[in-house]
Image (cartoon, rainbow, N blue to C red):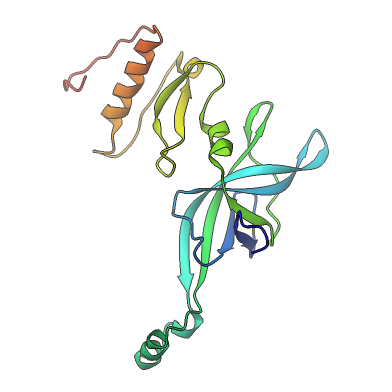
Length: 196
């Protein structure tokens, strides 16, 4: 590919919420990885190119020589000869771009052919950290070098932590409580199960 940071290009039908991109061999991102692309969007009545964050939600691989109905003998021959015609397509969900009011979802779709890059840590940090007092809740799943934070000002009313059994709700609540206490906040925890 011409730009070594580029891992793929937008293909097919796109919309403002999702897009697919074909992936360069050896550059396949993992599901939940973050990518960056540019989308033209309107701001103050003017169309400008915005750097947009998206998250990979699915990866599909396809080899036209190994479609449904292809005889097993043909598949074995192709495999034994080391022929690789695999095409990898990733699906990504658009998160948005940074604007003066926060994270803004674009109202326009990405253009097919647009380069897609792995989001740099510094770009991702702009979305998951806060400028003022932030509570560190831990590293990102796909980027341990990037720490996610909660805005302490957003916790002045109500907070819900929802997840399946065993997903880490009690641990997350404990981390948040510890961070609040380190920031001199008052905490009242009603704990009938003895988790804290």
